[in-house]
Length: 225
Picture (cartoon, rainbow, N blue to C red):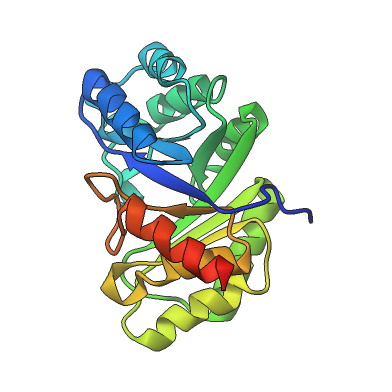
């Protein structure tokens, strides 16, 4: 499988409750050096398909549309059909759409088909599964979408090495070890060809996320040396 991007892109999540603040935060993140944004639609109160589509068009920057389900620490309050409808509309204008592996298969396939590029994602906020399990998850995700993603919680440094070990064996995969213990994996991931790494501008969307400047500085030093 060919690598989708020639270098790791730094993605900044936009975590705002209103369309106006999401637009403002997007502009600030772009000015701060983001390569791509992740619009967390589930944070926006009273989101609807047309308004989300219009917001993405107004932001006018490479963007991942994510409407995270509650089962994976998301905040979307509507029905599953509403969540999918919003993502289908977002897929018309977003560069990438993120859809969870746990989504009902018909809905997942609808999203992937409508998207220019699709991330299929998996999250475990309690633990780090073993390597074989994570490789199985990644293989399932890559069969369904373009980019695999998993984010897991480490309890020991050894858990973080499992994540990097998996990343060393696969392509087009975003692999994150969360929390303070795993924060270094976010800047080491580019050495393993990760297409994306996540950094914060003001608010972080996951434990252990570093800011844009720190992330870019570490990545540049690692890749130069």
